[in-house]
Amino acid sequence: AREYLGLPPWEPAYTTEPLEQWMRRNGRAPADPPESAVTGAFLVEAGRREWALDLFKSAETQVGGAFRLGPFYADHGIWERGPWAAYTMWRLEGTVRPLELWRLRYPRAWEPQVRSACERYGLDPRFIWSIMKQESGFSHRIYSSAGARGLLQMIPSTSEYVAQRMGWEGFTPDDLYLPAVSIEYGTACIADYRSEMGGRQYETLAAYNGGPHNAVRWGAGSVSRSEER
Image (tube, rainbow, N blue to C red; front, side, top):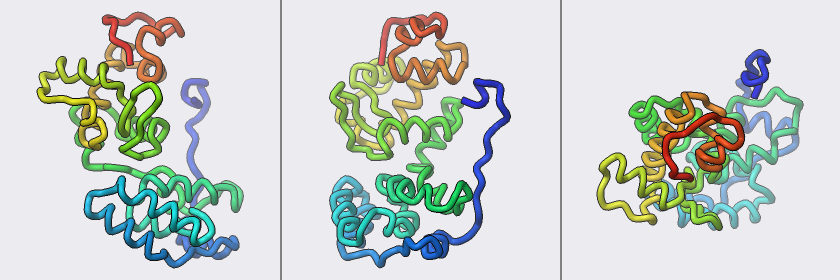
């Protein structure tokens, strides 16, 4: 937004103080993870993240809030709950926060898959992570009332178009719940919209959110096909 308005780039202010130390100093001591949290982390490591979320929520109730498990979530890559834990601590002490807290709130979820897809389609991984955070909160089993599914909330009809265009066979809508599929299809779609929008980032976001023709109505320019997200 600052770039769009012609303002200098914004830089976050952070400290290298350990997150646990910062929390204790601010009266928000972390908790020892209860058994439910430990079991949830085991499931995450076993590739069953969707089975772990209820366990983490139960653990948060046991210890008195998501923030008390913040360091545990950071250590175990719990992308779905880490941002919420960080959010509840965000205003504890001005605007200078531990770097660990920033990383907890803005995680590099599924980093190998995101970086690989972005390299193929010429996109900045931070662009994809920002969309992922907004669309799904990094939860790959999310389903919207409009039928959008997965990390990047692709609608099946749009995903089918992407599959046909790229020559990918065997696609089914439930494949969008698989992180690798959602990231690949979503990144390919976003790259396609970026091309249609002349490489303009904000217009690309508008096209992804509301469909390219709605983006045109909002002033984004012209598009070359009728498919909408």
